[in-house]
Image (cartoon, rainbow, N blue to C red; front, side):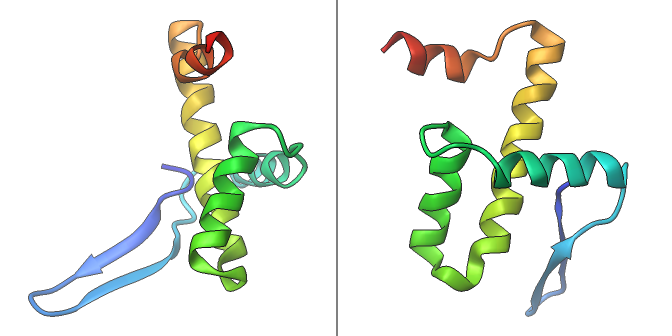
Length: 93
């Protein structure tokens, strides 16, 4: 749970807050740096650009965090399964 947004809700109110600070700060930093420095033809960069375009330039940090979370999820499954299936499909097409 390194890059999950904090979410609190009551009956009538929903509070969405910044990401939680659970887990390794070094891993969180490395994921954010990897997303910031990726080239334009990578899936993480396209995701970041799509979110920024949809939500506006004020949501750049939100877009970076979402792309970093997606990257971390892909790395987890690659280490667990030995292959990143969603990227293999786009490479074949």
